Amino acid sequence: MRFWLLDSIRSYEPGVRLTAVKNVALTEEYLADHFPEFPVLPGVFMLEGATQSAAWLLRLSEDYAHSIILLKEAKNVKYASFVTPGQTLTIDVSIIKQDDRFATLKVAGRVGDRPTLSGRLVLERYNLADCDPTQGEIDQQIKARFRLAQKVLVSSDTMTTTPA
Image 1 (cartoon, helix red, strand yellow):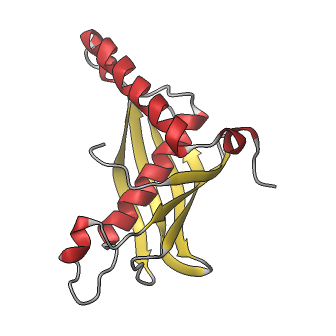
Image 2: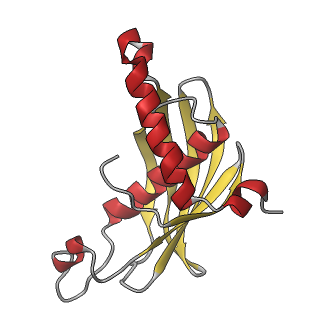
């Protein structure tokens, strides 16, 4: 992942659901072009935020079993309203089904109570060493990087408490 869209993970229930937030600031470079007179978070960034949230749910639930988690398919994605600078996009993801390689998740984005995004994502997860055993060290480096990022994104009380 080249950039992080999420600012924090607010709640997490292992193997079930996760809630993350993205604060939209006017200083984000892409807003100068999208759109100069009416800056809004691009829909593709909302989708990327949902994908990153879903990947974190899998990563945390499986204790970093896979180094690579990527979007395989986005289904029935609908955008309901704009997200503008100064607003916080809250993203809820929940697991619908999963097997050893693929997971299907329901995603919903909102600003306050106003829906912004909904859909289903299929994520694929694997390790580089699955195809090339010499890549095992790279898998470990990637997992270590995500473990460091977890310290910034997830507070310790988020990890120990789950929503009712």
